[in-house]
Amino acid sequence: MSSNPFQKRREEIFNLKALRERRSITTMPDAIPIQQKTTICPKCHHALTLDELEENLHVCRCGYHFPIGSHYRLQLTMDPGTIREIGKSVKPFDWLHFPGYPEKLKAQRKKSGSTEGVSTVRGKIGGYSVVVAAMDTRFFMGSMGSAVGERITQAIELAERKKWPLIIFCASGGARMQEGIISLMQMAKTSAAMERLSRKGILSVMVLTHPTTGGVTASFAMLGDITLAEPGALIGFAGPRVIEQTIGEKLPEGFQRSEFQMEHGFVDQIVPRGDMRKTLIQLLRLHARS
Amino acid sequence: MSDQTTSKPSVRDLETRINHLDKRIQDIGDPITPAEVIQLRQFKRDRQELLRLCGHPTPADRVYLARHAGRPSVVDYVDHLFTDFFEQRGDRLFREDPSIYGGIAMFDEHPVTVIGTRKGKNLQENLACHFGMPCPEGYRKARRLMRQAEKFKRPIITFVDTAGAYPGQEAEENGQGEAIARNLAEMSHLRVPIIAVFTGEGGSGGALALGVANRLIMLENAIYSILSPEGFASILWKDASRSDEACSVMKLTAQDLYHLKVADEIVKEPLGGAHRDPDAVYHDLRRAIRENLRALSHLSGTELANRRMAKFRAYGVVDPKNSKNIES
Ligand SMILES: [Zn+2]
Image (tube, rainbow over the protein chains, first blue to last red):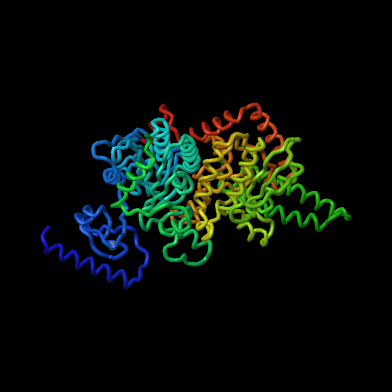
């Protein structure tokens, strides 16, 4: 990349920022891809190149954690060469014959390059055998339809059979509305599986990433032995907009964020992305069976 | 399934006209003149006809009926279906939430635990119980009562009529998600029979938190859905006014849910809805609960838990014969 077009791009970005401020838009989406090669941090408005992002695990120097896809997440976390997908054969289904759902699924698959909102794998972390699920908000907002619920449940059941610790990276915008009640039932299905795993004495670690909301929060995400969160993640059952409509006032700054949830007793520790693998290895070591 | 002739008046409109007639019938009272006798006879015939038109409600009609303020509440069901009710309050952690009503009672001379979501009968009651939307402490109270039921080997009967869990600031601070999740997890494993009765609105995770049952009975006009039709329309189509359309595509009626194997049994309601003849509903519901309890009574605790878990394990598992539904 030559410096001249880059300079021009920066100016454009700068203008855009000024424009935004003039329009006094206070809320911004999590990532604004101005162009393929640069992204603006929604927190500090700094423009980051793709190289910079990759180098810092998609974390801005201000500490903002950009949402990342499930495959990248698994690569960051697991021992190289040990990852084996287990849930890929589980596919979504149009239970309600919902108008336009099959087409929408196809478009999501194309856009995200994923087959559903979660990837489930087995493999190793620091030499310890584990089952890992990583949710992906790029696919249908990580909403929990039957395929997400089924993949998660199968992952929990594999951990139970193998007696391997279970780690789930949660990220979800809520229910898959096009699957209606079947989507809701996934909450009960995954929760029952988590309870069975727990009664077998097997470790489960939930990592809450931005955003973890709706049905996922009211099911497996809150049922781990250890609950970690990435900094600044939105974690809650009801969305902030719904709550604001209910109470008729603005919510305080930081409401439902990771730090807030830790203060209110629902998160053990907040772990920056760069320390996540190290922390997970520590937890696996502390729970290793001799 | 639903007949949707556009010319057919909505149950809401029919009800307004019935109420109007009722008032005029009341005004006449005991007819004296022959003209009054004739008029009264005509009014009563019109009323019958209007009620008849309430048959075959559309999904939107059923949503209207499910939310009807005159519908029996959990307090009414406890009064009429059970004896010797002892109310239990509080979650033993934080406080009492009146939007969950529960305790111990006799059903057919056997002790049972009864728990239900409560909507108020007036504004003051409704403010106290958030219009029937429980807080985390309510779900934790329900869990406490369910654990006790297991301890004393009492069957559990839940009554669900809620728009959902309360989406308030404090409710979130106190862990609405955690409270619901814990109920789902523990309820799935309980070693006593659980029967859930959906009597009105069954909204989202807030309803499911009392709905992980061996048998799910729905009243004919009850609904059960992932969120309200209004919320659905505004999220999916950015247009809350399309909620009638949402009612149809969401598959939220008792009949839809029976076909999706979520509801196990439907209890019929009188023409025009449960509020037109609550005694008939109590009678039929009593019979349905009795039969379902009897069917579960011979199962061991382990079998009860296993069958309940197997029931929920099956939701969303694709039949390989059907798997071409989305792949083109
Ligand atoms: Zn930044």
